[in-house]
Image (cartoon, rainbow, N blue to C red):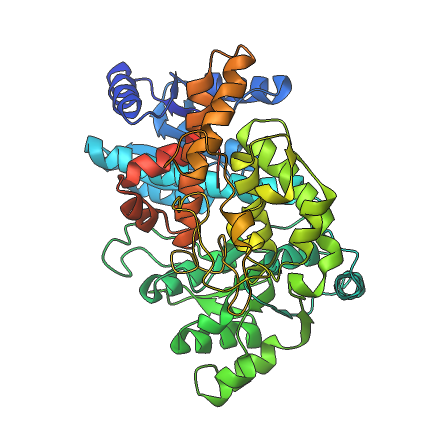
Length: 510
């Protein structure tokens, strides 16, 4: 993890923050003035070294103001969260700094636990920004040779010079956000930000503030003015995922923005102009939602200017081999291991699977195979039980290791699936794990095989390698189960909120 940079000419402040952050496993680097910080940032850029995760700066220091430092940093590193430390007498100056993009202010003398909590929030914000940037830079072009996907590609090409509103429909896990990113990347707004928000994942009470921002004092806890997603997406694209789940009263506010391009922050009295292209997505039948009174008809027509239907993976079976090889490569990079190869027989078995969870489900299966397949070449017998279950009864035997093969009742469609109702299972294929020790489940046998291979290779970091892989899989499975909600995932795993956040950072997973 990148360090927290602390800038203050007061040695006692630096010392207290360093020790407190160290106890939270947050690395630090300290500076006494703004010149040192700017020089370090320039050197990091020149030498391709690590810059800061978050910068915490005093407002008044010899040799340069924290506000001047903020201006210079935001000009070159707009996504870097900056926390301004200030005495109460400097509060007016600190508030004005928010216009320059400060993340938050920390009044002196400060409460140490609150300071750590604030820095932790800034770290989370920074990592969300990094993930979004990595996806934009590192993600390959969309994969797909199937005619249905070629139609999608052609539509993206036709829309490449347009700013028109687009509604993307398709089943969960089919890749709607990837299409939205492609529409942004190939649009006149490509140099602007791409901001995504899942309206179903944010509590109703917070969603309005997330979308439109809020003024200081708008509600309890609103200590500063905060820009919403519409302002963050200024000059770029705002992706509203799962738009069908948006609360009815917020639909009215969204309609107003789409109609005249203006909105008000929560608690605000001055309208804000929104120069944003809106792309929405849903897995629901919005026409039916309109008939049932759950979705505004006028908003539906505003969103439904151009509609793109994304095909389910079962409609594009010819793309399964290419997607599988791609996801195996991605999984290997994430886990720091050699990528595994897959046999033609295993690919044929995957292509015959219906994939109720679509591309996301195939990606999860590839993660599972990278961890659990015993050899470098994945054979058909190595595939998870839900894939092997095609061809036998729906009551197929599932090995006792739920971690290795989660069942449908334990996982939503977004994670590892089980055979759909009516599909069958080959009991012989499913119950074929190596019997190194009677009574030991297949995933434990797989772990033993992996440990033996690493030990035989003379590795001296076997504990660390396998522990990281085990923890990564456990956390990814829990996050899939809770649809990305970290606190709920931590509760289900029986660990603390700070622990899961720290592990996600250490393991480099989303």
